[in-house]
Amino acid sequence: MALVTSPVLAATPQFDGGPTVSTEAGNTLLAWQSDGPVRLELASDDAFSDARVIYAGSAHSYFLSGLADGDYRLRLRTQDGGTSPSLTVSVRHQSLSRALWLVAIGAFVTLLVIGAVLRGARDE
Amino acid sequence: MNEATAVLPPNVGWLLLALFSALWIGLGIYWGRRNKSFEDHALAGRNVGLALGSATAAATWITSNTTMLAPQFALELGVWGMLAYTTASFGLFLFAPMAVRIRKLMPAGYTSGDFFRLRYGRGAWSIFMVFTLFYSLTWLVSMAMAGGILLQALSGIPYVWGMSVILGVCVLYTMRGGLAAVIGTDFIQSLIIIVGIVVVGFAVLGNVSVEQIHTNLAETRPALLNVLFPAAIMAIFNNLLFGLGEVFHNNVWWSRAFAMREGVGGKAFALGGLIWFPIPIAAGFIALASGALNVTVPAADMVGPLVVADVLGEFGAIAIFIVVFCSLASSIDSLLAATSDLLTEDVYRKLIRPAASPARLKSVAQYVTLALGVFTWAVCLPRIGTLASVLFFAGPLVGSMIWPIVTGLYWRSANATGAVGGMLLGAGAGLVCYFAIGWYVATVIATAVSMVWVLACARMSKSRFDWARLGEAE
Image (cartoon, rainbow over all chains, first blue to last red; front, side, top):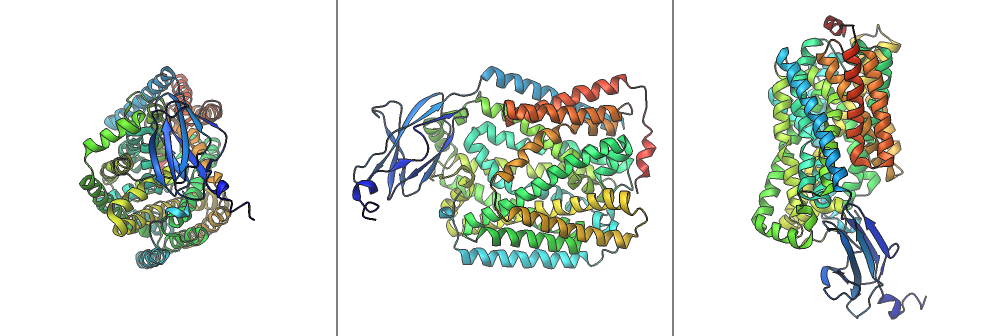
């Protein structure tokens, strides 16, 4: 029981899951364990040279979205200086050419449906 | 979503739940007192006017998904995601002329099952019944489950109690009042939802400007403003076709087409689409404003309530609770009524007891509603989270029914081979793509494959359907 209340453990927040998260839509739900308030920092390099705080508070999750292609580093920091191991979020959006092909197919099918209904209604 | 995000104290939640439950049940009993036959119960005496017709079309289409998933779409997929959600209104716009045609061809019809049976025969009808029951029951389960989860998240009311109360209330007033009660409560619920969303939208705009929202998104979530965001642009037509398939095939909409007075259906569905169209835009806009308002989002599906509670305080929390309750009730009651009518008409009356009296059919429909409620409650009780996601499998199923229905209503050359093959091939190809590629292609591929088969069969067909055969429904 003494270990559970140890100040060292209490000061070290941890992300849930593995050290790397991959997403094809630029979004992911971050969840973590911590005993107190944390600051969630986002940076583009391992040194966190351009880190910015994207959340500060006592919640245990944060929904990250709208990220462009790239690798992002995140870490949690507590008020007394505890820092979590960093988490890498790797964003690789789906193929744009495939997306545009599917849009073209969807648009074609939709236009034919609209045409069939409107022509049928007109000829009634 | 978690209970830590509750925006209302439980006692306020219980009070609101009790007040609105009493109101809906009271109105259901009042509106159901004139129902004597199955036609009164299932189709409100085929006498629904324009105001009630438009309101019920809009309210039924405003599900908890519209108020909760539309903000999630915007937060995940940006501006395109928000617009993709609004494309579901095309289902109502295009069903408007179809409703006129349905009423003309089948003046004594009861269900969409009647159409499949008379137009394409028992084989196509059987496939339709499997597809539509899968879709309707999973939608019903997902709505009831969402009800319990949302009420718990918003006010801390335990999941089982919230789910049981909302389902029980809808079962009670649908049993007692039938479609008349469903449509009547839909009218009030649609007014509450629209006023609630408009107030919230203006309140958000009063706290933050569009320019501030744009600047914040460009700095912190740039992909949400990207016009070539792959996942978002793929969602546009997949969502649109999913919406078309849902509306075109389901008895929720066909029963309303049969229930409206002659000449009303076309205008009512078009107006319903116009009323519905701005709701997901307003709901999505709220989500996009979350960053500029400095509202932390611990889970994507809670972004709407959290922003509203932040902007409007306890008043906003009460408003969002009522809006969510109304949007859930307006969809659950419609699904209960339409599915019960489908089972009563297409299974009990057509297969088991063709000579059943109108009073007996009404009584059976009430018991079927109760059975559907008990079944849904039992499935929802263990709160298996993955069950709600099963609804997404329905995309290929409903997409594959679009062309058999459209050509079946307007083309004499459309035939059973085309309908059966279109549904089976389309649904099969869509489901394969669902698992092999992703949800965002499933409905598009299902509809495209079904279309090719249906059009080819109609082109090669020498038979010409006699429209008078659809008038045999009674």
